[in-house]
Image 1: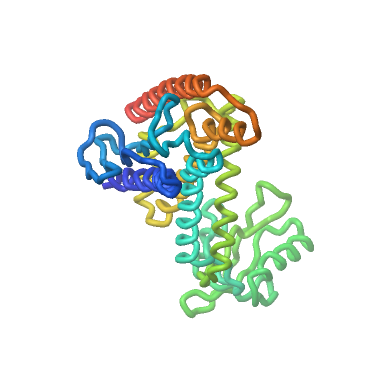
Image 2: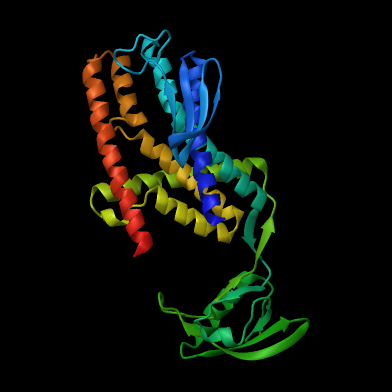
Length: 343
């Protein structure tokens, strides 16, 4: 079941990407002979007068066959007969759809989950298990008093402990009065030395409460999250190029399916977040100025738009070389995925 969920997630991302190319090509009246989801032999196809819609055997990848992209093609209204701006839009439409999908998924997740904010009341949400206080204080306890100092808000807890330990740096325990299940209790609770700072702490965090979020706030947070994923992806690519990430750590389609499949056990929100993450990653990868990728083709179109003419046969050879390299890279990464799964 987990594998099916993972394949569905990847299928949706690829479908949306190819749908962008397809819709833009149709808008500019470019002939599209096939719109395929998956790779390999056809397992199902639906023919219309202009386009064949097909489902292929290997549920990874997909393509839109826009006619007229070959140098020697004489197809009427083909890709290469259209103005540069039209070709630019068709090429970038897939990436745009990936980013749009990520935004929509993030928006749905953020808006449906709302925003979790810390409770202002001094109610314990969690006690760190490696602290001494974990044997005395429990989640749900409400702190009423610390060493004779009344506690009314969460911020009073830290301020009071700081005050008490500042007055007596040798103190190891504090007297805590708390409310548990409607009953008041007074406990002698040990403090724990903070490993990162020169201070003593209880080691507790507040209870978080869910609050509804407005459409505007959800949209703002979704854009912010999408930008963060985008910059993290660029940083990851930089680490790969500079050798900070080893080639054996790279993950391809099989590895992604495993990651998404495992994440499906953690709930819908985690799967949706991974869908947004993968969608942005695919968008960024396709934008790279590498031959055969959308970004590589865009470079030649942009050069044409600024008046730099490149021989079309040279361009085609560059893209073929890029395609061969990409196929080799896919084989390498897929082999690496299989090795990581079986070891």
